[in-house]
Length: 365
Ligand code: PMP
Image 1 (spheres, rainbow, N blue to C red):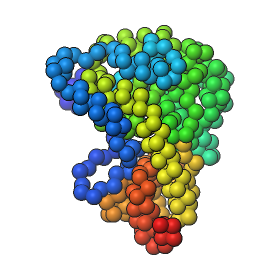
Image 2 (image 1 turned 30 degrees about the vertical axis):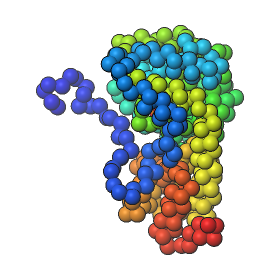
Image 3 (image 1 turned 90 degrees about the vertical axis):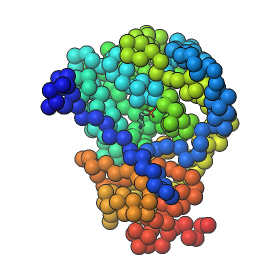
Image 4 (image 1 turned 180 degrees about the vertical axis):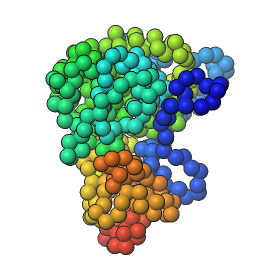
């Protein structure tokens, strides 16, 4: 332990983000980034915003961006909180709502940043097992199971499994737990799941968290937001303004507004990814993979002859990065981000070479 550190720093177990190597010809399918760029209108808006106004501090409460989000979901601007990526929004939410006596309930297989925040803030965790099909069972988050819980959080669709609950199922969980905040992390919702946002006016304990990193292709700009009743948003603003009043720079705010308003580009880009995902799923199945039904921009799959870690390493030799998690129940799986149609084709051809079988692409293109 470093004598200059505050207590507890050496015990922290930080999150390990997907690697970002700079290698020529590398196909990066390991961080669920969008294969197409952000809206051209968002890019133009940011270029136009570069100028003298950067001399000034940005709008601390991101008013225009909150209004753009509110319009999109038919809610009020004071029901929206903006943060530097949804990771920051989540960090503030954990601080604001979960540092109370009792455990935080979360799925045993889920976004691995959640336990990291718990470690940072001293929050106790109770992990709830996914069922044998790797699905969240809502009944495991109510009644006796959630008695005395300090909060509930899960991604919907879940990550890295990619599977989603319906809004009606989420409603049952939120309704059964009026004593605590339920956070639904909808990082991947735009790729085919139902958002719980329409429920926020009904339930004061529901917080829905979104990011522009995935479906808006804005990971490099770091923009995330939460939607909930103003009582919850007030708490988040208090935490933010006690930590960093200007988490989003001016260019990120301007670009995010334009990205949200460019519905036509969003629809097109989302469709590309969804169609490529379905084709990729079929090709992986032809190659002998079991593929969980995905509502995201990634697929979670396992093969009966090759382990997840081995496939990941072999693909690295083909300059393709995917992700494998050395964790109980899922170490056989690989998580593959959906790329462009051409990128998916390259991936499938490489996997066929590794498995020493014919590529299903051959007969198709
Ligand atoms: N939630 C989930 C489930 C994620 O997979 C990610 C991306 N790693 C995030 C939140 C955070 O996204 P960002 O900070 O880029 O908004």
